[in-house]
Amino acid sequence: MPDHWIDLWEQPWSKRLLLFFLLFGLIFALDPSGTGLARVVLPMTGFGTGEEAGFGPRLLLAAVLAAVLAVNLVLILKLPLKLQILVVWAELLGMFLGFFYSFDLSFPFIVVRLPILILTGAFTTIYVSMISIAFACVLAMAGALARLSKNGPAFGIATFYISFFRGTPLLLQVYVIYAGLPQLGIILDAVPSGIIALSLCYGAYMAEIFRAGIEGVPKGQAEAATALGLKKGLIMRKVVLPQAMKLIVPPTGNQFIAMLKDSSLVSVVGVQELMFLARTQGRSEFKHFEMLITAAVIYWIISFCFELIQARLEAYYGKGDVR
Image (cartoon, rainbow, N blue to C red; front, side, top):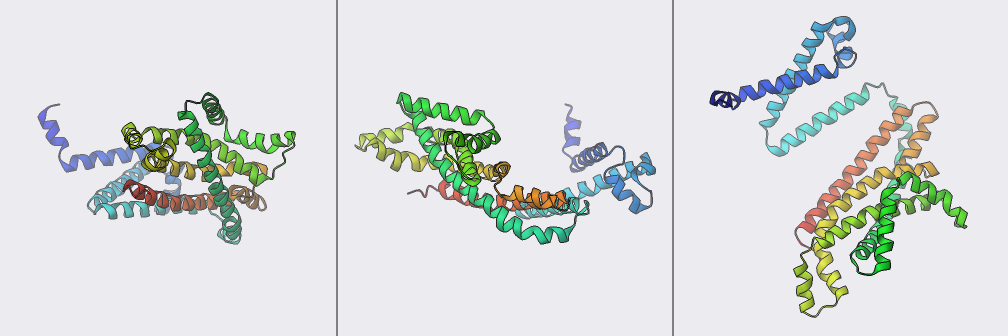
């Protein structure tokens, strides 16, 4: 590339101009027929609907929006980093709220049913997920240790379990456990069936996480402990696992947040968790969208709270404060 082109690219105005054209092209490409954003904005300016206004006003609208977004981004970048993040979050949240508000939702309907969604639905989602992740951790540790052992039957059982439950859909597992176990004379309610299905499925995935975390500890640590005369069980508990936790905690937190959302699948067997109540409450007055959006916001808030907890745990184990 010639030097004068490089010098031109390094000019601040050239990057801002490129940003404007990229935003302009993106905005116009997302609404070329004037049936989306133009349908809402153009009538306010007196041009009529997006289809009636024609190509020119829609082009002008895209240019104005691109300019506003480009200037907004340039101004944000002049702020301190933490303030940049705060402003971006606030703007995106405002855009999402505006997007939902455009659906003409019945807010009194949402307010009346919000307590049952939180006190029954969200509570059930959280406690089912927490019990399931506890059992899943136990299964994962057992599976990981069996995968690392030289015991043939243990290795075979572990690999079969991991392969089967990672290779079949969770929804299928929920149905098989709930409807299949009664064929063996084992009759379980919907909640225990859902917990068992979630535990088995996520235990299989997390077994590989635990195995990778254990193998991620340098072998010299165990060899040094062996040279000091420590037994294998003590080495695993006191030397290997505390160091492996630094590698295990972050992906395990991600698995729990994923489980919060996948717990909605147990609603197919009648567990009155958040998604089940959102569907049934919305069905009564054909206001499905109100309940689905409310459920989405509640899921997001719950996930965000556990993301903060996960960050604290990662910071704790990252400092090496492990006993």
